[in-house]
Length: 554
Image (cartoon, rainbow, N blue to C red; front, side):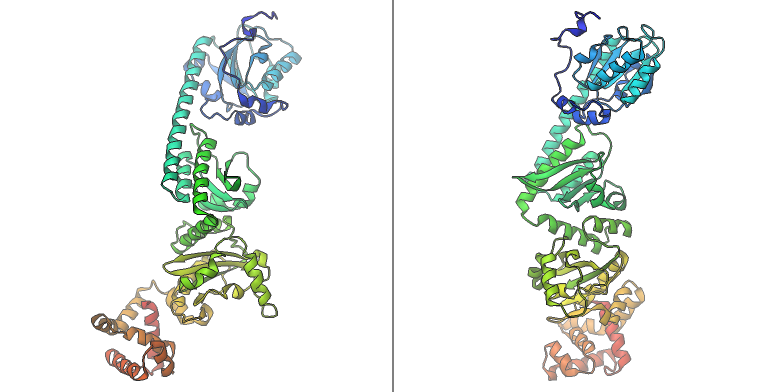
């Protein structure tokens, strides 16, 4: 083949500038096209499949014979030379009649290897000039290298094909630039106004139309937006799946000033003009700035508050979704002993609990507590396996605990303050059922008292029946005279009655709990009996009033 042909002039200018990513592929000639397209890293480019859709190529009746059509097309190159590989920079779509190509199988195999090693996007071979049909060795060679091979039955104008494909390339690049600018403005605005982390993650998922997860260095979820998919579908076994680094996931680090806090991960979704990596990079910058501003422990508090808000507000579609969300965040549910504890005065419990807000192991605290509890009944058996979530809600500190099965939370609750703790639950459903009972019971705890649901069966019954209209009617009917009196006079009859039912048969203790002198207390007691027309020494009457007070709340 003559060396002075036009397509062998070294200083030709009808090709794109060399791709700096080209060096990534050197020394590894057998990478797949999908891997090579990832190294190109330019989502604004059309793929081989996109290029085949142009009208001028469709007129040639294209037939895809083998290979991947997902490779990006950076340029269209026209050549019939068998030494065209030396002129390629990677990512070209080769239009050829094969006029200068060899006919024997070995030579065709070498030609395909050279083209694949040059990162060619694909071959479009027009039949009729050199080959009446596509040579089977050519098809086999392209198949072995996963190189797209397309035949054209009819003659087409290569110059027209070049113009149409290049027009698409330029339009895609312009769209990508515009989208990058829009993303820059979006995430800059979010950073400047101090948008919460969950808002940044949500906007990222909305831009990509795909699930996006912010995870910490342990691959445990901090915030996730599933983009409309079920949380169980996206988050089940998240840490294990994330550690395996699925190649179809896009991930970028969240880091600043030499410190890396985690990664922002996008699951597969529809194509994006700027590419998922660009979107994640912009979002990761905003998250890093937020992390610097919020300080140490910000993600731990965010995770705990978000999970507890979801649990209390039942912000989940199914219990499976909730379990997936908890476990993906490092709070194991299956095969564990689950507890909920509530401190009625968050200010008392906050100092002791802030250090344990992280969902990760509370090793130091649990170890100290475990050492103090040695020789007593079994409490926390494996201190490295204790997980907690803690947040303040409506003035109460809510503490969720996940312990090894058979363990008790006693050492961990030593500094909780006045409140209540549940029985052990073995599933998320049981834990959910316990929460209203424990919150109701915590409001009855006196100074320094930690009440247990197991010791308060009537409180548990009232909480479980709180939505029953018959219980509500019972409460309203029995307590109506006292409520009207207190509203009209600013009195304290309901408070006194609570003290009476809390200390049945012990009027001295009831008076002390009411913070009244015994003489004043007995005056209130007589007034209550008159208004209710009831005998407050009767056990059944006291039980009915106790249930009514529990249903009434505070």
